[in-house]
Image 1 (spheres, rainbow, N blue to C red):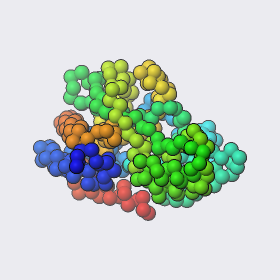
Image 2: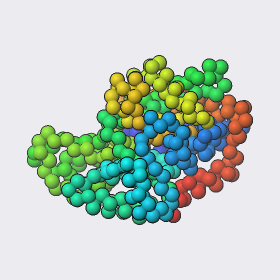
Image 3: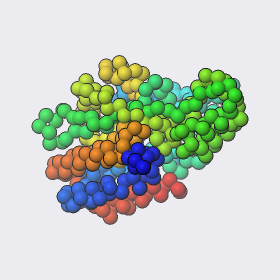
Image 4: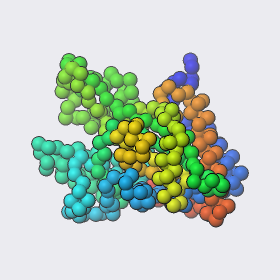
Length: 349
């Protein structure tokens, strides 16, 4: 059996990361700080490892590169949310998600029911009822063809401080099925080689159309959120990296004070526009918790993935050490654990 070609990408996060935990410990010993990574991005709480405000980070991104959006404080009133939708000129479909959260937690696309607009308000009300105890963000839905993740980093002590680098680009391919005119939607996705890992979620999402016969050649997008844990295929797009792309993200990143390491999750209208630096909409900017997501390409071996991850963590360590030398403190372990627990416990409140 060739272990390197098993579907390791679907391993539980904690299991896949076991070798990284040991490398993390080695880097922590060298930095003399277990939580060295908290100095990587002074802009973000805990360096962007957990508990940081996505909305606050997005507000530091140049306006031309971010979607229309607004913040909903915990226990915000439904009527105030509706008023904000009008004020910010955001209509359905829209994206709503927790202000603090990782790995796709709570991210939803609320569709536009043209035939019965009242359903739009009911879906929004139901979402708020479920997550009203935490801060939320509403964003306009950007219907661009390409969804990418661009991993960027820059060393604070680099003599040419304007020059950064990109070491990972992932292209997200949404989970879809194509009708044959005979099979139901449930039959189609139950036979799909990737959707079998997400059957319960898919049955819940498409419960009203499970027995619908899908016409021949009709393409059905099963998941509208580009998250690996929800079935999206992550494709290695590192071939897109060149000086032109680096210059574009250098220009954006230089305008974000206190940011040195993280992944831009974005949508763009085309590759041509990507290299021209236009029609780029950044949906999120993650910090120290970022991954070089191209490693989850189905054709990448687990050994190559670990090689990329070790390099990724080494860059994080170098940046954190340099920022610390420039006066950015490391968060002590006790305080980190306290804030880390608080960030995750509020999900269950």
